[in-house]
Image 1: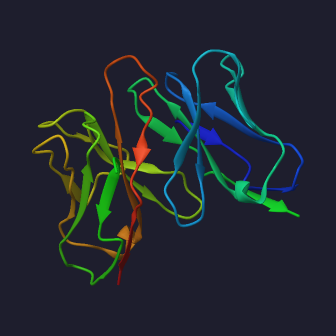
Image 2: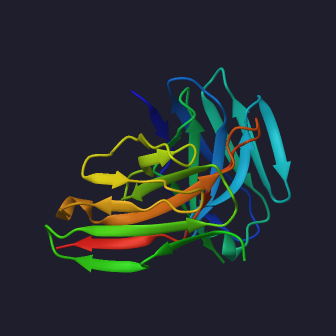
Length: 109
Length: 115
């Protein structure tokens, strides 16, 4: 079967750095996405990785290792507005997205 | 403003009733999707459409139907609602087909409660 694993919840301090991990087992791999979802709102696109390595975009970076079936999202200089759920999704061999349950990130002052 | 709209925002529905959730996008995207989101679970694909006139089944299609008469609209119908269909429903769209990342963009969601 297909499976995406992420921690259910994480807590971090404002101004700090946090790493959210995602491991996956899917039928085929055509890219990995990270989305941010604030409570009661729609998911919004953060990053996309298809090749191994680190993609940096401002305070957010995403890393992929295809051989390990592993990705992480790194958030630097945390702000209160970063409190949200972070969703990991893998595009499989049918070009459909398989989604993890999401990691709820709580930022404390 | 370009994007995806969904209607209604929320709905309480009696079991056995028929309900259509509406979704419209103005980005001229080829592909559209319907997901449901339940607490503790990832988004699950119900139905999708790669282009106007075609539809396909996702992971959890039973009890739902869709149509794609044109590029912009992708309604989702519950023929006879059951309490297990209580969920938040998201419509999404993507450009598809040009070798890009094919990012999916989401509508604001419809919160449906079936009693």
